[in-house]
Image (tube, rainbow, N blue to C red; front, side):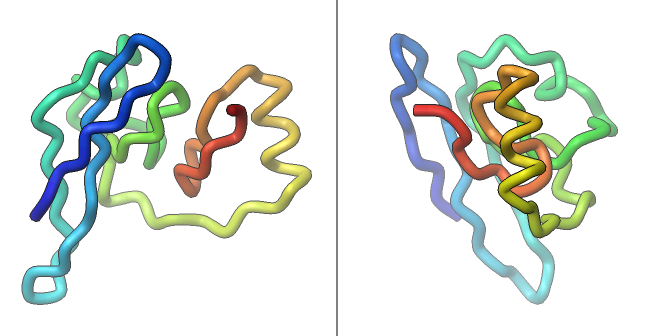
Length: 90
């Protein structure tokens, strides 16, 4: 398992890189400067954080998103898609 440190503006966020161990997806988050409360929740209601894109709930499956769905999330001012983790704004 490997973590990757990504700089977003003045923030440094540990974004997970996945490795499959015996068919089980595992993730570690060592460092997060993200202020989103989903990182501290045991059962976050979304897969990915809308602020940093880090996975906050691995038990939620990755969804296929449409461009219309991403456009709606951009209007909500999300930086990352909560369903697939894709970066929505630059």
